[in-house]
Image 1 (tube, one colour):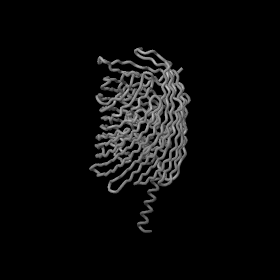
Image 2 (cartoon, helix red, strand yellow):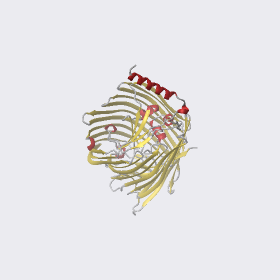
Image 3 (tube, helix red, strand yellow):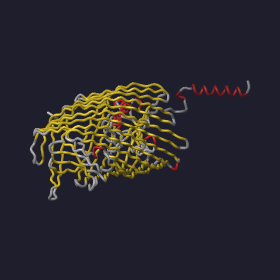
Image 4 (tube, one colour):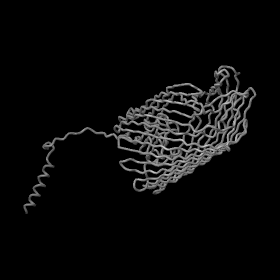
Length: 612
């Protein structure tokens, strides 16, 4: 036997003896370790995006995308109501699924088990987000083949409303087909809204006489139905995204009837009983396209066409025991077409530049009947080029952009045009993946709906008539906001925020005395600015091994309404929401303080009363 073979045999025998010796003779001591549990991080923030991973309980408790957002309690978002999603300071949030704009049907048709994570963006530079200022993007599980059918239904027995929707998704390699059909109804006989109209009439001596007209319903019968089909085809590769969606909606409201009492404060007019019967029908079709192409050398191009047509027919019969009866009707045909073209070039470390051109065409034809017989024809188009620059260093992300909008409108045979600038600024800084701060500024001009420019004079009740102003022009808004977000761990998050808005060239409702009562018109020249401030805090706690989630917000709103109103109002607004998860069940409680809003930038409060 060779020396090498002898050495190998001795080595193996020595190793076997060392392994086989009793544990008590082992020269290496062993110690049992305690169990170590590694918890995945469910929320993080950065200068460009905040990422949230839904838990299994949250996905099981939600039937659609907005419901999931409510259960997740994302600190940048306010209370989610239906499909209305806003930031915690009340700004609109656009919803996307895998970087594609999501309709209400898309959100209802989502398979909750496929939601991998949810992303929140402020002023994202990705061209697929089409210049949206605030975005929630659902990231879904990807499949190469297959599909599913989903039925989404609910019934609210106390509110007497419900819906039934059917969705199907078919995935075949790069193509995805989505088909949906559904409807909802609401039959409400016990809830209505009281209204308080405040009239301010200038007197010949320079004073202003103020009185209120108060409508208090004690009977209500409201019926709503809506039916819709939709079809979407998606072609997706690493460099091309093409989505085309065709849909329709058939809305019926055969009854919107109320009855009750009308009184005045001070009581300069006698109290009377009233009845109000309304019905309406709206049929609409829509097409939307979403095309994005990733080009060589850091370039990308996106194009987003949209078209909708709607026909509305509505009638109203208002009467009082004094013997006055007023019938009004309106038929409206509306066309809306928009398109957005965006080109992006990425310079790498030097930043990113985006060139855009937006176009909008609106056409309305409205025929009034009843107390006023008139026809309004309004056509408006807007063209708006712009340029953005974005710079990102990892912890810091900044965006600045601007451009102008050219507006041209024709009402009857009268035409007018104007050119207005717009500007965006967004600054975001992340101290780490738990703390971030962001600030933004936005300036824009806004066109008004055709009804605000109507010359038809509508008699609503024995005392009140209203009309529009054909000379009203686009108004300007200036918005600035600041937000701080803190996410110490999976159990807690916190946000502090502030936001201010200034409206210039605004319109205001003005009341004038006439031989036939009071005429409400719209005034723009000589009207003071509208200012709003909002600041508050929001927090979420997940307790009892994540079985209990508590989310709440407290905010303070201050509103200054200039000439001709000259008042300042402030309110404390708050809400509290809780979810408790037990096995496959979840229970929720929610309370929201009375919500107040501005109609025509006039402060108003929603009041609901129960009929007897």
